[in-house]
Image (cartoon, rainbow, N blue to C red):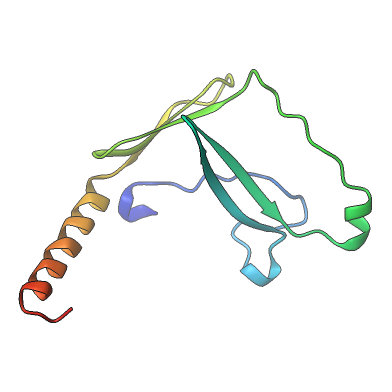
Length: 116
């Protein structure tokens, strides 16, 4: 994260899981971003025991609160929240762009020499 000037966001999603827990110890699983027309659906998966499945319930989200993300190039992502107290933040993309350009250059060089 430090290489791309991005501090981890600590999100408490499960009181039984340590932040940055190892995969086999984690309760939370994948974060999926699913495109739906001109919007995206964000899903967070997690593991539950059989007893917890029986007592599961839906969680109502507050429709007045949102986190908006604008993807770009120099700024990889810009985030703005409608929730009071959360300041907008940027994820710089120039280092990622530089890494990608270097990779593309190496691939082009290998292809020109037929080493791909």
